[in-house]
Image 1: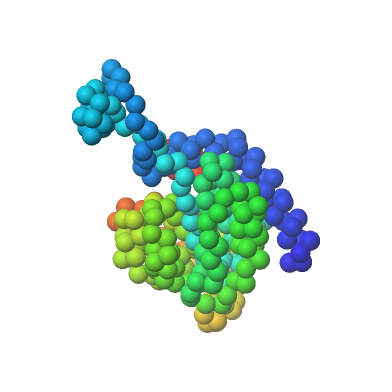
Image 2: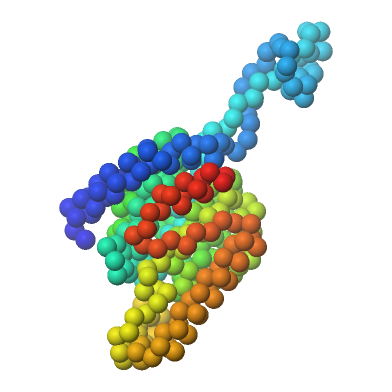
Length: 287
């Protein structure tokens, strides 16, 4: 895409997603993610109804009257967006490529976070981590993240989700909200999901095109794997072949859902073109 096309696309995404965010998501986001804990604010005299465990015993002993510690919620959070940029994500048979759909969802999440003064960071990965944008605040930063997702070079390589998670955990020590975008077409080490979900709040988002799950009858055709370069001829007119393919995809999805459930992590299966805002709204409500 040329620069003017990128700017136009980013602006269109901002307009669409900010309407959704302000109308439905921002309030639920704030309610769901209230912060990482409490921080000390001040000490004041005890009042009837104050919790006994808040009493500051040192000051109480010094002044011979009860004082309590006033705590405030630590509001600021960090959101990390992990985006798969393997070649299979640069694909789509409907109105949007997977990468464009991911950019929209990332924008909605980013603007929700920005509206609550939270930081947002981005990791682009495939067989390795290709780019890291450190967490920052603000609208301009979110627009930069959208642009990077849209304009990244989507590489013909097998995606290594476990390597991306390992990299993130090595850099970001504080508990974060982690949103993992991928079509999950490649194998990964499920142990890393369990490790990551113990430290971070993790949501895996499988972004798929309808043709990922079912191939139509187009006769003999040459199928090409954009990531490995492997080619194979298939008789798509065979009902048995199409059924076997669809069942294999269903089995892969069931295994994926089971991996996330066993890791105490959340998971969404999202078709490009569907209304993701309802799914995110329900996710925030549950949290």
